[in-house]
Image (cartoon, rainbow, N blue to C red):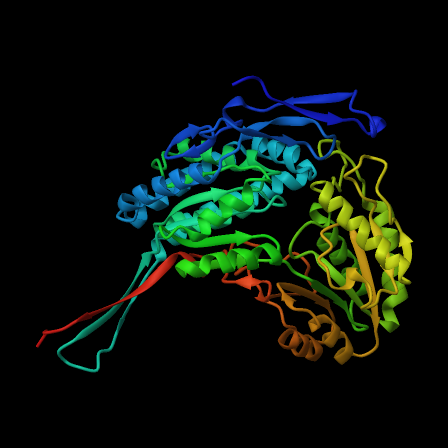
Length: 509
């Protein structure tokens, strides 16, 4: 492999790529081929696709563009490996995962640099993500030894009844571009701990992080075929996804992404009745009651809305603020944005907000803001693309938002605060629940009785109460309604990858 450099533009040359700083990545982590059956493979037809740095448009490199035939080969490799992998002991799998985790920790800085280059988020956020992703591998290395069954009381003295858990088989994993390291590890670590084998399909915008993790899995001595990474272009991705969903040898699909794509995959899996784990889009309410500590709510809003430039599935999408504290909250949030957010290249010191992921996402955010303003929303700050570059967007606050505006129902996935005023607790809860999504929700209140009422009333899978950062390896991550099926992380995360088998022993008199 040739030398690989990170190119980052300086703040003084926001519209020009003529000035760069260079950061060299350890070459062994740069992989441009897919990883199948323990081998680094090109597409059989030799095709590749280019990956670009969203901060400055620089071409990072060309990656193997696998198609349906290539994907079938990866499934076959995972199927073959499952025969022996499912027979390994929990301790053996635990030790291998632990070694994988240790290698991630050792290579944290390089993994973070790679992540910032292909995804754009600030380097400090990238390091946090790498730590978070590795923590899932550590967690499930420990949970592997806690996959237990039950012995239950038989109704007959001649029988004994047992339940055991076994791995479901080959699992396909389709992961998003916003957290290309952590989302893959949250899925793969649980599956491998359970005794499943994997075929991972990373987002076409961010394949390098997945390939680097595959390199570390090889160094950790995870057997060939147990963890496979299939890369493909935007053009080939739907075809590859269809193969993964319809192949009868794939026992389960784990997908993180939009609700629209999740529904397509759901339909495609019907013919083979697969196990499905879907973490889909959200429309998270962030409710500020008049009983709230407004300063705490503002700090929570900053963390919840602007992390990853607003491109998280649990990002606050609708800010619902009670009338008596509405002006105070908006004013303090506007001031906080002006004081603390610095838009720029993720490698620049001090940057807190990077670019949007791609042109489609940038166009969507701008369209939603323009639509809201045209229908009567008040623009408090921002509202335009940022001069840093075509994929950067100004931190924005919109007030006087109503249901006629697309932004009230669409997942924004950008640095835009959409504020709605309400008068009573009942009205606020009603607005919060008036969506077919139900991933995460947040509310701020100092009234303990109100806290209990609202927490039980909100129709989401995860609720932050005076807290806006929900994610942790110990937490069960997932939603209700059209925000998905199943849970990831926590002690429940392995359940998605195991079958419960009932054993009845007779003739024991």
